[in-house]
Image 1 (spheres, rainbow, N blue to C red):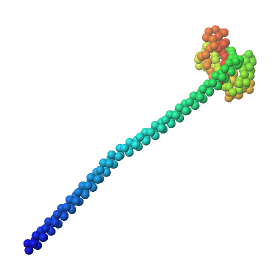
Image 2 (image 1 turned 90 degrees about the vertical axis):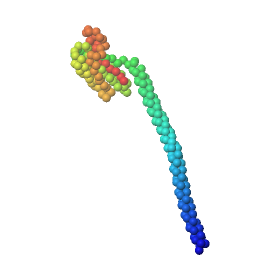
Image 3 (image 1 turned 45 degrees about the vertical axis):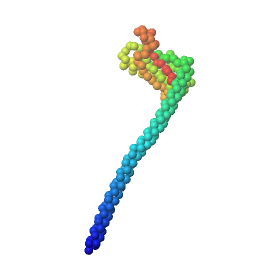
Image 4 (image 1 turned 30 degrees about the vertical axis):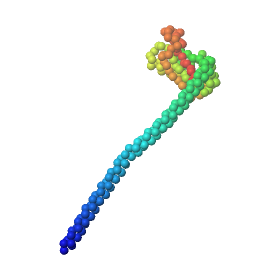
Length: 210
């Protein structure tokens, strides 16, 4: 009987030991799994900044390349504009030099009048011949007055004088689209003296080619 009790006790101790061991093993496994997960998370966290940094570097390089390309395009546009401006300036200079020898004359008006005088008609005919030979040039007709009268009145009178000269040129065969008019009134006298001789010189229509 004692022998059986002893065996039963040993069996109980063995089962109890197995239970404790199994529990320890499971706990150890859980601890190991948790440690592994923590290592994975730490590794992922360590790798994330590197990935972000690489993306930022790629974006920075792409932006620098785009900025360089934009700067090159802008400079190319500026160079092209400068070449065009230089070409226009050279053409204008050449054209101006070619027109220096042209004998374009002013016409003059009676006091407070805008009608074309007989002497002015011959001048306009000679001017018209020059304008026809330079058919690519625009014609500017300036109307001027002497100092007498108000600025407003003389501005209107100067415009009438310019328009009369323009119409006479049109009647002589000059294309109206080539002719522009402008009035300076009494703002641009040829002679600043307050005498009749100066006033007669200032009552004029002046012609420019451009």
